[in-house]
Image (cartoon, rainbow, N blue to C red; front, side, top):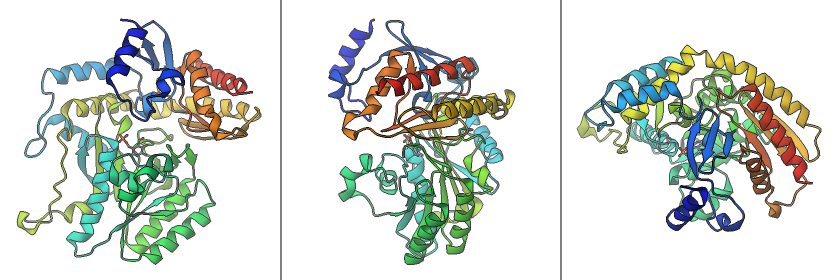
Amino acid sequence: MTNQKMIEQDLRYIFHPCSQMKDYENNLPLIPIAKGKGAYLYDFDGNRYLDAISSWWVNLFGHANSTINAKLKEQLDTLEHVIFAGFTHEPAVKLAKRLIKLAPKGLERVFFADNGSSAIEIALKMSFQYYKNKGEVRPYFISLENSYHGETMGALAVGDVSLYKEVYKEILIESLQAKSPALVSEEEALDDMRRLLEEHKGRVASVIIEPLVQCAGSMAMYDASYITKLKELCLEFGVHLIADEIAVGFGRTGTMFACEQAGVSPDFLCLSKGITGGYLPLSTVLITEDIYSAFYCDYESGKSFLDSHSYTGNTLACAAANASLDIFEEENILEKNGAHIEFIANALESLKTLPHVKEVRQRGMIAAIELEGFEPSRRINLEIYRYALSQGVLIRPLGSVIYIMPPYIIAKEELEKIFKVIQGAIFSLE
Ligand SMILES: Cc1ncc(COP(=O)(O)O)c(C=O)c1O
């Protein structure tokens, strides 16, 4: 099989996500991947690409990781999947126990689903129903401006990236957006949140945030102190705090979970993406005992939480997640990432003075370089994407923001290469 043959067949049958299919005719390459190993992806013609974005922020320990592969193969011969209502299995029980131990204190129960957006839907529905079960109807959720929580209708409704949301505005539930601490001062953002909470007192079920980094919102970053103060506001107004750590969980911001840096325990913690090391779709919603209790009653009361997805708590996905947590433990990953984080900080510093660089920012293993001075119609993200691919690196800028979110097994020389290519990409725009 060759690249060309694969591309022809793909374009005949497949409608790709997050794509304008017409772009694949001339603007965008479509790259058929034959195999992956470590931080590299290999196409059918033998070219390799350094995966600097962990294949949409999911891969933690490289492609075809030998530890995860071995554990998955073992699980595959034992049990691949079982209905999760009325049945359970060892990988799920083991994973739930481990997540509770790792998560901020106070989160004591795990609800499983199978992708990030589903986890958000579950948290929103559960928060709403929590109050309904207690006799209150609270129809509003507050999120931050520039936030992103997924593509299903509820998740889109609480998101605020117009590129994805605008077209559906007539059919989305109404939600409220407070100013983002990544875009205005912390004080202004908190004042705005207070204003909304006061204006809609008794009608808000929860506040939902992406702690520390609004990833799809151009990797906009803010300080942990905002989350600490936001939690106080949530307690003052008696609303839930949902932490969407789907992108930032599992070490991305330097700590296992971003909320840790704020010393905050949310009422809901949504996890996905890196949870399986980037192998299989899985998500979890961790909740407090208080929330769990609001649903625990006789079936006839109508207060049960009946949300379900066919692949909830898939056995293979849970096995991959356990293997991934084994690697965290056995290889001291968070500590080891310290060296990568320092390297990235230095590399960013040297990019600061390049032409068109407006700002560089970093939270742990996430780094962003914001460019300025280009007309949006030029679509420099595509130019940079194509340039980097021609140099063997996969980066996928968000508008005028180049970012990296590499797998943790990345070598220093590979990081060097990524930054060299980013520098070249910036110069190539002249
Ligand atoms: C913060 C955040 N929440 C939710 C999602 C949605 O996850 P999924 O793409 O698995 O539905 C994403 C995906 O990028 C995300 O970054």
